Amino acid sequence: MKRQTLTWALALLLASAPAAWADVKNLDYSVREVEIVGQGPTAEEALANAELMALQQAVLSLVQTEGEQQQYKRIEAKILEQRIKYVTRQKILGKGTTESGGRYYKLICKVNIALLRQDLEAAKVISSTQELTQQLRNPTIMAFYQDPSNTSTYAEWAVGRVNNYLVRHNCKAVDAAVMRSLRQDDQVVTQAAGQSTRLHQALALKAQADLYMSVTVDPKVAGRSGDYTYYETMVKVEAYEASSGQAFISKTYQRRDAQGNPEALAVRGSEDVSAKAVIEESVAGVMPQILEDLLLHWKRNVAQGSQFRIVVKGIKDAQAQELESVLRELTRGVTPQAKGDYLIRYSGVIGDLADELEERLQERLGLSLERFDLGSAYFVIQGK
Image 1 (cartoon, rainbow, N blue to C red):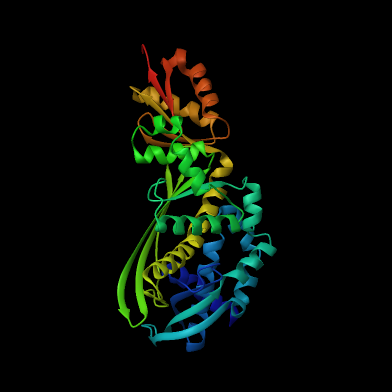
Image 2: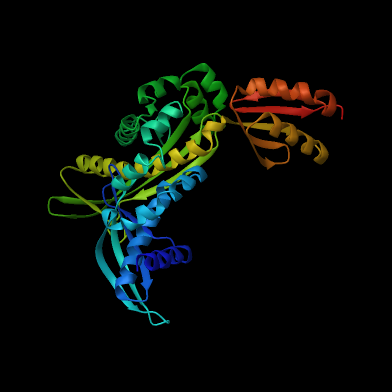
């Protein structure tokens, strides 16, 4: 029976739509609710399959890289056999009979993510947050609200909440006061050239940050009842690599109920007190999602080096092929953006790479360095 149930669950997992997650404990992401449909020849097996699929969805959110997936195969059967250790059936939303005469159930299950993560770390399937940050230099992250110069109360609450969360999870944060003082630095002002996107990257590089994050919080009054004010809010966080200014995360969070519907937060007190509570709750909810994506990005990319941009003006198709071949030889990753425009992964300094490219391709292609600009090196083709 156990083997048959497992087979049904895995087959259904591949064929079904993604489960709908809802956060239950936002501050540490220790528990998740999932709404899922399970099928089986009998009611008992259909319910068991739903629980197995909920567990498997949770595993997939933690076991992310190819190496981790290989390690997980060693203990997969054991984890799935112990589903009742991790999964609690919360509510039956619907049930019925399948076309083949079997049964199906639509459930809400609660998955203990903290316990699952603990067992996967103990089995050396995944690394702990602390181990990852130690391996990857404890990245420094600069966070700001809309614009680094914003000193509003909302900005201070939001950035303070983000920085506290990052520090608690072994990352380094750029203090808001330091960030504002750097905004007046002559080099930063020159590099920004009056453009906000360039200013953000220039500030991050000046602060020696590895990554920078833009946070936008939009609290709105949804209603009032007696002493209570009801707030709805959206929090959008975008994360960028400082070396290239390239975005790699964009997440929007809104407080939701167990069914995944938008939910207002009831707060008693003055409007300022209410807004502060909403902002802190909202940012607390989005940061675990952001940190989860950051860890995946680190594991897949940052170990290969910093990301830079190489741009060559006036390059022809045959020359572009030769340039790309040399780039792949010298770097750890090349992603073409357009003809003559490449995002690359390099473990050294971009100046050293530029020197090497010019030495290798100046005579063959007429490649000549024109200028450096933030995390980019611009070249031209001369006399070819």
